[in-house]
Image 1 (tube, rainbow, N blue to C red):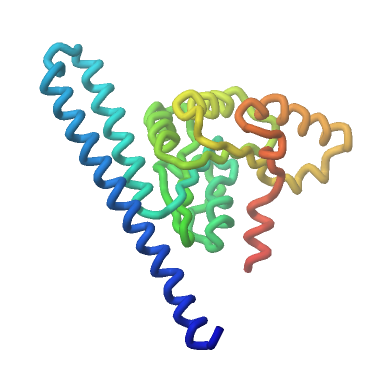
Image 2: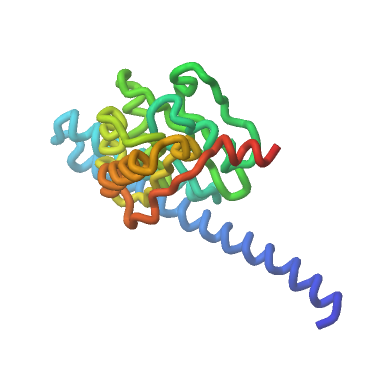
Length: 230
């Protein structure tokens, strides 16, 4: 193959990829229009016979599905980070995107709203971790339903509030792929061998139900990764 042919092939490849994505966007847009039409027709036919609560639930489900398809059209894979406040979700987001974009603070509960950060074809969503305010639970549920993948973050064996959050997310999005990231794992080096093994055993017992395979429970340190990048 000549240099000219190699250049032409290299140019055509991204072009074909773009054309394929544009076709996908067009198909998703068509599906969205059909769903909206179906919803409107259903509400016309039976909407008046439904209790207000049932009607609101149906409309909410259609809205969430529409938003999910809109995210597909962006071309990004959306990952949502869940865990208690100050467990290090913002640091993990920074590590995944390769720069300090997510706000990191030592005060409890720095993140109070869901924030997304972009890297190439990825969007990382840092979900608020405080559970004692209902609004955060609502945000967690909404982001769980819209994400293409979930990352559950812990830094020791999970507490009852953490498990409450993970159960909440799993209940509302049971089929979304999940991994568990044990953050600040470097601190385990300061534990005795017995305590270290006990912590890992308890993490496996309590978090194993959320993942498809034990290998989906990962140990690491987002802060160490960030420092290596600087």
